[in-house]
Amino acid sequence: MIFYMAEAKAQEKPEEEKPHPAFNIVDSVNSDLCKMSVFETIATRRSIRKYTSQDVPMELIGIILDAGRYAPSSGNLQNWRFIIFRDSGNRQRIAEACQQQLWIAEAPFIIVVVSEMEKITQFYGVRGERLYSVQNCAAATQNMILTAHSLGLASCWISAFDEDMLKRACSLPGDIRPQAVLPIGYPDEIVPAPSRYTMENVTYHEAYGNRVTNFERVLQNPLVFDKISRLIGGFVEAGKDVMNFKKKKEE
Image (cartoon, rainbow, N blue to C red; front, side, top):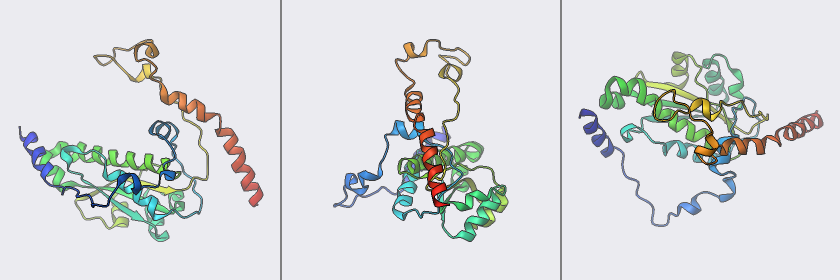
């Protein structure tokens, strides 16, 4: 019962958004920026570890952050906070805190996702501290990396970091915990689709371990992402050739 009451109280916390009378969400984002459907975005997103030196417009960073803000959260507590880093020295310190993954600093922007622990622990106790705080920030992180990809940018979800070092690099107070580091930039590599477990290997029916056979018949064409990946996959090698030719030309 206490959790239901906590959730009701949490719903009262965030201020309701009051739309500007002249605001039209259709006009708020340039349709040319939205390059992919949600299916294409999910199926073709890759973890990118090489970035060009091209700067990223702040307009696109704003869209990415807004996507994170619209993620679901337990009790609507919205415990995530986002810190943007553009300064090269700060980016270098963050890369060093991420187990010396210095390639991270090459991205023109880094977004660090952190969790405010006090409120979520107050409402949900140990479960809020250990689980919900992580789940909520993970939902926001997924929104942001998918949005970045849909805008023609790239990212990589980094969780390998020394927490104390990263807290110092971000000047985080004691009750704020880092959850993810997201380098953001234009990709300088083409990464082929990684292998995936089949649907039969990851899905059960009614009880754990109760496998479903003949998935395509039972769920009526569920493998839309596999089909998109195969469709896009044919362009990967051609894309690599183009990038290699471009680099040789620049040399």
